Image 1 (cartoon, rainbow over the protein chains, first blue to last red):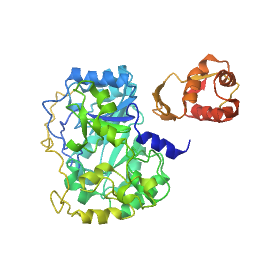
Image 2: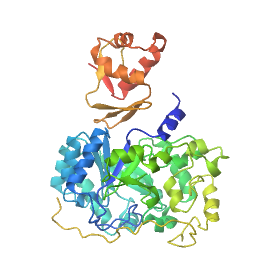
Image 3: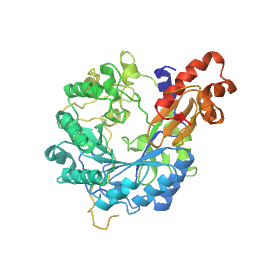
Image 4: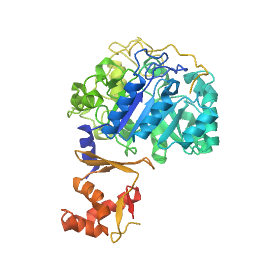
Length: 383
Length: 87
């Protein structure tokens, strides 16, 4: 079967998600300026341990092979490792993202002993200066310390996850060197204008020239993981490895800390809220029958992109990036590599480049929710 | 190296999830996700362990002989990605 038929099949949706992100807390000891979920404080209405285990039971029944756990900083939930153990015991593998600050030597040894648990440590630069400007002072040192501990414990190939910005794209080779030094896998993802990122995207997102550089760099390094997040770059030529399509509500979704289900990790906004795992029928009902997901699986029109010869390659780009920059969902991505995004942004009163702050000329740009932006203090009682 | 004259089976670390187009196979060890894009291939993969070799499994399946070469190629690819293995 040709690859494009697989794309068509995936657009119609799967019986269960392939890639499910579960943000289990909005609590975080950092306050990264691009945080997709505007995390900081824990929500008092977070799923209880019992409710979270019921979600895991459902994922087991649906044969969701693994879940990507994030937050917030997921490890600040006191029951975090209890939930990880429960998931693994039920055949649901766990990949979790952490800023590394709670990893102790003992924890690193326990993680090394666990099967089906992958750890992903976030840094957003190859140096403290570049990283800490985004993630906060001391965050680079804390992440490196966690990496040292995992390496010392013999964890093997953990992942180092980096959101690409205009300040760290010049450090790509240095990031590879850091990963290679640990025998780790580098994972690069795209900066989205979501959450607090809505306010910083204008000054942080890569320049047009950097996008071209990144495309060629990625083409030469198929071993670098991307979560398929740069498919908009495929309009530059040969497709990047992976699924070149928006998986929102089709192969991907997000469960938030209070059990709300959104179309993808980058659209925490009422418009993309499909339902709640707390409703009758639980997660499966939302995935299979919610109005939002059903509509996302309908064949869509290419809209303003229909006359563009590259539509098959880029599929119009990222829904979330369009939404939070005020662009129509059936038009070009704000970072369209053929330049159609800039004119589209101009027509909605925004502009690409530094200075697109909150409310600056963004006529119809939706605002992310109020968020949970006050950071929590990291106590020493963490397990 | 895949050899259709030998016995195979689904890898013990692989889970198969039916989908409208066939199935998804996930290997818990190497964490690779594989698309099995034909329901006949899904049934064949599950049935391999009941036969002394791959060709006997093919002969016992409803797959028309004209398509066996394509299915052997698919099984060779699944061997390379450790979805199935010689037993």
